[in-house]
Amino acid sequence: MAQQSAIQHESFSVIAEQLAELGRSFYARGWVLGTSGNFSTVLQEEPLRLAITPSGVDKGALAAAQLLQINAAGEVLAGQGKPSDETALHLAVVRARGAGAVLHTHSVWSTILSGFHANAGSLELEGFEMLKGLAGVKTHEHTEWLPIIENSQNMPELARAVEQTLQQHPQAHAFLLRRHGLYTWGRDLNEAKRHVEILEFLLEVLGRTESRR
Image (cartoon, rainbow, N blue to C red):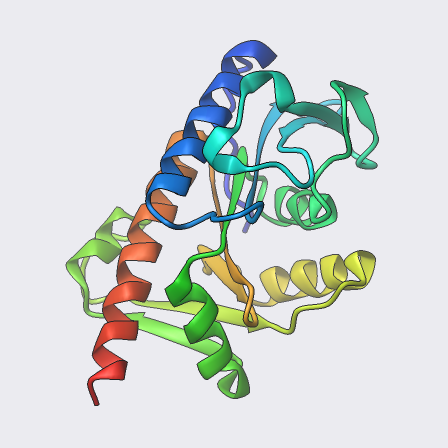
C-alpha cells in the first residue's frame, strides 16, 4: 500500500530554500559530491507539480533560485535549466508510494554495497536500533530489505523497473541502483531526510563490517 502523503502545500520559494539547504548539507557529509544526487518535493497533488533539482549542478553550492517546477510529464513549468536526468525515477516513486519527497544520494558506501550485493538482488539491514527511525518501524527486530536495481541510461525503462520493484515490495523504504546510489522517500521532506540519514548510517556500518571480514 502506498504511503499517505503529508504535503503541507508550502510555497515554492520555501520548498526551494529547504531543498537547497539540504543539498549543501548532504554535500558536506560526502553523500552528493560533484554534481551527483537529486532531490524533489511534491508541491501540488492535483494536478501533480514537483520542485526538483536541475541537472548538472554542484549540490555544495545549490541555491534556491536553481530549483525547477515540473509537471507529471517532467515538463518544466517554472525556472531555468533542465530538470534532473532522473526525473522519471522521482515521478515513478511518487506514483508508486504516494511520496511527498524523494531524495537520491551517491555515497561511497551505497555505491560499493550496491555493486557487491548486486548478484543477490537485494541487501538486508537487520537488528539495528537505527531502523526504528524508518516510518512504521517500531522495533530493532526488523529486517529492512533494499532491492538493488540494475542501473541504465534508458530512463523510461529504468522508471518502469523502479515502479515494478516497488509494487512487488510494498514494505521497502528505499532501493539501490547498482554502483550508483540510494533512493529513498517520505511523506514529506523531513521524513525523507530522516530516512537518508538512517540508511546512509546503516550502509556505512554494514560496509565497514563487511570490509573487516
